Length: 222
Length: 289
Image (cartoon, rainbow over all chains, first blue to last red; front, side):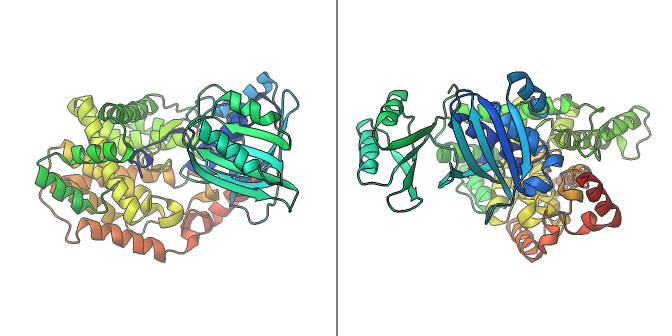
């Protein structure tokens, strides 16, 4: 624990879980999308649904999806800014099974037509967790550069990705593998200690059997 | 951080001859592997953000629920009219605490210290004391390291989250952190710092987290005033030589055991206490519409 987990963060109120955490979920989702969002469908679950309005959770999520961080003073005006930037927003409620009380499902369409579905939770104190990407389990915090690869559930993909990372001197902090069924769709989530270069991401996208590559960079512009 | 007890910090300060805040700073450098300059810079940023939030209060704002807003302006008026019972120093503390709590509820930028709901306590006492005594900024930053050190030990031994420990963990912790910092600013030694914190925490043990409609508004905003006043009273007691009969670390442990024994209805769920009064329930119903 750092002293700055106690004093700080600097944030727009009123709640670290319902406001700051919600901005962070939106912000990471925007980064995972890798392009501006054209349409955001936002489904609130549990306490996000029941007390979200009073905590500004709705405006916080939209602010994050526009690329704002939890200390951005424009968060309360995010609805107007979304309209100005051409991001359409739809809200709804949802009852997710076995989800954390502060959870949200986002169905996003990017300006290029790229689609992304995310299920995320705000755990308290501004910490968050991405639980699912495109309907497949995943579990990461957004505190590390994170690579998410969808591939066919066949031998060799994990080796291919990890050996390439090793070749680039990128250390893997955590790694998870999930699949919907044997031989079906699989997903690997790698949290890394270093940033991965855009070349590597493009190379990976072209590989046979790789369905989708999503990369969360912690660098400012992406 | 490596300290699991306030006593460890006191012992280390005594052994090394270094100041309490210096021990916390060095520990942070060691744990985070960030340079001394960077850590100091980070803390300065937080201090300036607190000042900024205090300066940018807007008395015309209302929270999304309309329950909160404008009360800071009322205290400001009363101060101007010199109608306050408790004297101008305390009135200023009250004004700042309410303003910060309201700014948070109205979606303005604040510094969580240790939480958003308790964000008014520490800046209210620190900024007022600085105003009145013209304290150099570096000294204020040192005081913030003390708040952080005390807060870390509380977070380690007990909790700083209302959902885990009730309001005693939020306003109680903030008050203890502020008390320690005030003892330091007023010239107390490390022993007095931790006893100031202990006296503050003791007086808020058992405080329930029972927010109306689950929002960080009622009673959170005004509890920041009580946390701040309690911090000042506790600091003065410690500076006068009063010591907590229960050792500071044991007081923190008591807070934990009380938090564990509290029903979940009193831990930020909005299902007990003020939230379940007839008026509290009516407000909640109206907000659902």
